[in-house]
Image (tube, rainbow, N blue to C red; front, top):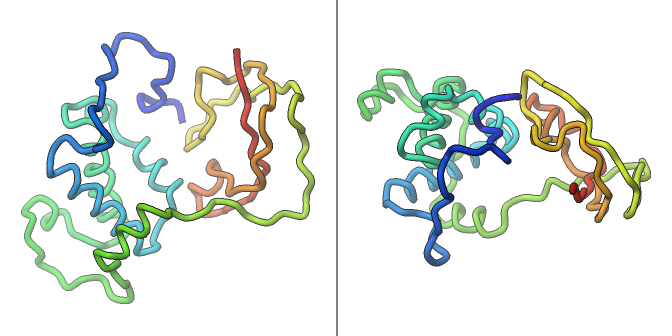
Length: 192
């Protein structure tokens, strides 16, 4: 998808602020939004690539609004809660539960959230295919303009690079955002 989220290499947004220390959160509400993000993801209704695609669907004026990264998380979670019948628009606007929870779902326990954040989950998948490229091969990134999610940044599309690492077969995010894992070989590519 070509949108405001693909900001790599763009100028005009000011300096990137330093983060002092290992703590990624600047406010308590950010910590809570992050925990809700992991807990909701633990329901198994969507995968990380569906989450990225939903984040990319954020309107530019909301994407660039004050509040930054975790504010975008919150907007995305609200849309997913509506899409997957986890909350009604009234519940989201009021903050008050008015309907019984969706049945058939198991919530993560708080201690499971810490484990999920620490360990994550692997995107590696088995494959019968051999890798198409090897370390040192020169490759050219496709010049694409998809209407949906892609992990190929705009600033390297059509550019030539060199394979520096073959990382195994992984879920292909561009298809995974539609529910199809379609494992592909993953390469690290160095671009000039």
